[in-house]
Amino acid sequence: MPIRPDRLLADMRALAAIGQHMTGVNRPAFSDADIAAREWLRNKMMNAGLAAEIDCYGNVYGRAINADRTVVIGSHSDTVPFGGWLDGAMGVIYGLEIARCITESGSQSCGIDVISFQDEEGTYLPFLGSRAFCGDNLTAEIETAKSKDGQTLKDAMSKAALPGNAAVRLDPRRHAAYFEAHIEQGPRLESSGRKIGVVTAIVGIKSFRLLFRGQANHAGTTPMDMRHDAGGAAMCLGNLLNQRMPAIGGPQTVWNVGNMRFEPGAINVVPVLAEVFLQVRDISPAVLAEAEHLVRALAAICAESFKVDVEVECLHDTEPAAMTPALAKLIEKAAAELGAPSASMPSGAGHDAMIVVRHIPSAMLFVPSIGGRSHHVSEDTSDVDIVLGAQVLLRAIELFMANGAR
Ligand SMILES: [Zn+2]
Image (cartoon, rainbow, N blue to C red; front, side, top):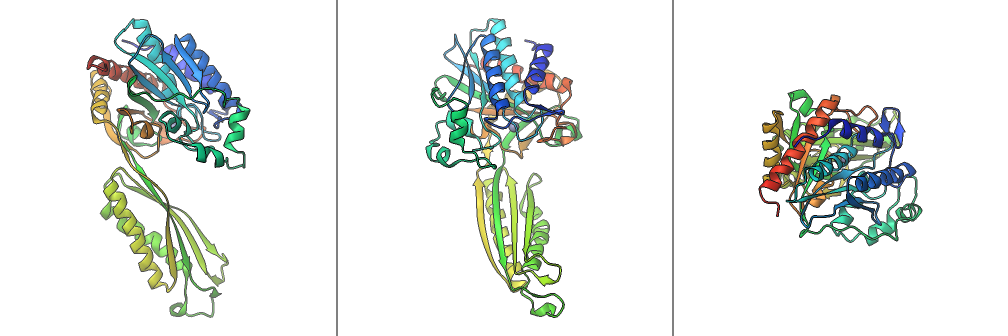
């Protein structure tokens, strides 16, 4: 069954015009542009013959009318501030196009439900839409969630006139599986000449804050062996981490010392305090646990050698989420049938699929990102690759239905 490239690309460009900023899009969750985009999507879904609604969280959901067993296809239509035109939006329009194709084919075996989740990017509360869809109790978090500029989530929801709407919930009796297509947001597909990424798992993330405390003193008169240098300990930690992490992680393990701050922060004063923020990502819980041991052990070694104290705090700890292998195989098979070179790969970024997979079989497909760029107005993918990705996803879903989605 062929998708219609003209219709797919026209809809993606029309959605990108809502909140357009240069070659990208500025459509943070609950902004006027975001709500306008959600209204536009709801209309598009209705025109595609779906029963469409925007729920109280801002999720846009299009329900296949004549089906009691469906595949859910979706992603998110909110963006980071001044982001790209494809992050999230592409996966939603793939859903819309595939729903139209399946309806037009007259297939009775299984329907397509389409969803655009709200606030995947965490303007107020990351994964608000998919977590609400999956039945997480968010009452307390919604009560306190605020944007960076201090707006409350509750106000944003009221301003969008959403609280009166019913919530859309995942129903495992109806929803047989979830498929999400997304741009890779990294350089691996492009640099290896592959066209389709088959996501094996979404990485878990451990984030740490380390605080080294020493003694401020004159940087000229205090001999090196008599210092309590918090800055020296922090830099030592960064270096040792780069040396030692490769031995415990696999080829896909990534880490980042993202910020380091010294007090008093003067060129002629030995730092009394150094604050370090670092993060480790991997798809293996065992590797992440070892990484935490390593961070704590190295912090102690560096503190001792620079005669300072250290506190290590784990700020966030999200578990890796493995995608459903049987569904990943279908994407691989579909890509092979269509002559699209594919590669299995982890996702280094979080996605709504990592929430949904806790409840129903789920899979993710990546298409190449030009130059690996994302979360920026330069984010792009060639039309040919966008069309091929949609065709592969449709074929994978056809295979799923043929395998007995019911
Ligand atoms: Zn995204």
